[in-house]
Amino acid sequence: MPYRNNRLSTDEAKTVSDKAMTTVHELAANDFEGGTIYQVELIGKDVKGNQTSKLIETFSTSKDDLPPVISQIQTESALSQGKTVKVQSVISWYTNEPTIGYVAYEKGVITGDKEFSQKIPIEVSYGKKHVAVITKFEPGTVYSFRVYANDSAGNTTISKTFTVLTPKQKESVFQLILKNFESTFGWVGKLNQ
View 1: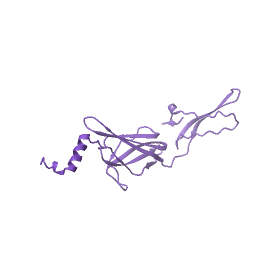
View 2: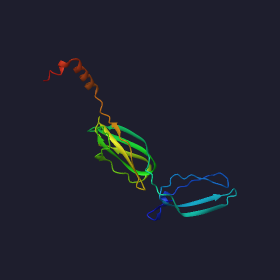
View 3: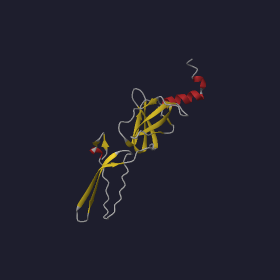
View 4: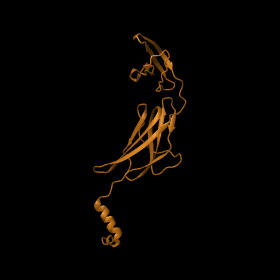
């Protein structure tokens, strides 16, 4: 369990176990945060059920000076029908350590290191799996975006720039027939003028 603001955070307790009967044990605990103090309890049982334990009240990890790694960035967009057609885009990504993050975006294809003027609010809790939902995209439009990840040690990573083309509403059968008819008989469209 980690200490948060000098208090033991019992809701973050995790257990790692090994059921092998041996005198030497090696367990991998991969969820430790760098530069954090933990309380660790080691418990062992023998074949007869006798138990022994050792409490390490202030186990400390080394300071985290490496930025998080962002991976598996995916996007999915869909149209929502109603009085007006709206686009809902979901952007998801993973990080190699617990982070909080956000997505910054801009309309159009953006190259270089230009700052994006639009962003979603930053996440409120640390995690390795992240999801952002954007409902402000316009249908049939290209947007550029970047993912930002911040770990508890203050290290920040910014992804490369990605682009997404949002879906647009399909034309009705009548609109397709009329468009085809106008392209075949161009003079029909001039009758209304």
